[in-house]
Length: 109
Figure (cartoon, one colour):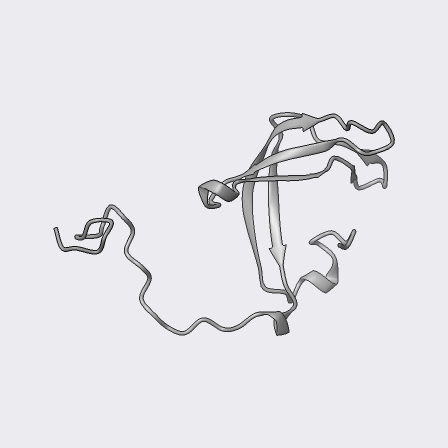
């Protein structure tokens, strides 16, 4: 894992996606030497994969250690090296459920 911020020059040319999220809860560690965790709900993720937990230790612009508050709105960015990605072929997007004329088994309505 890297401590680099997405604004670093090295991140400029990386394919990336940024999703909104919200801090659902702050989890105190069982071991007092371990950092607390922030549980974040990722908007736009599949239902079973909406929550992630991270160490609740961040750095602000002045280099000070800070932590997230419960309810804070956050952005989750996933970036990859260009050689770790593959170009999508030009294919039509899958229809959204409200536009589809078939049921969940693919049968015509």
